[in-house]
Image 1 (tube, rainbow, N blue to C red):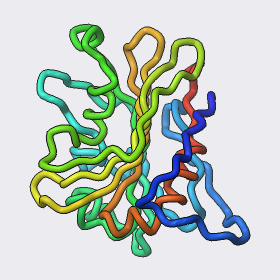
Image 2 (image 1 turned 90 degrees about the vertical axis):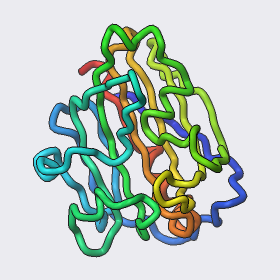
Image 3 (image 1 turned 120 degrees about the horizontal axis):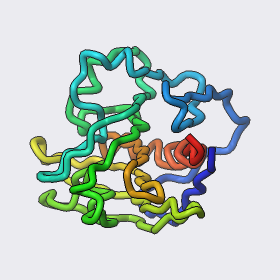
Length: 211
């Protein structure tokens, strides 16, 4: 596993993190052991088996002409009552953070067209939103040619036209045959309240570069 250190920018829309003792965590790994993340112990984890009846994984967007099938995935959230029902609800209805760690296959037809724009768009399709504001954006280089982008963005969710916030990381392997992505987001009010915790959690995300 290779650690990805995310930037903690001075994001004016996010409230300051609260001080206090660190809460206990749970380490979650996908079934193929390609990604791992540390979640607060009271967050809910949904395995690939739990998601069997859910066709659309949160934060998996299919850009037209750029099919990237899911190879492995898990989803997680901070909702006090565990249920998969809200995983398919609009993100703007999420009063608690919702996230996913997903590994996708990149076809040879798509490989030469991968860009920083596309890496973000296939996680959170905000570029075409009626309003969007990138609070922070940065390239990532893990070494060994594992490269990608990390973004914190607020945008109008298509369909509801309500504000949502998302923090995401999206990287490819050296051969650009595999996409590794993690994202956490929710309604704007939720994102403002949980922003520092969301960034802290994503900072624990690991990619297995020897998988």
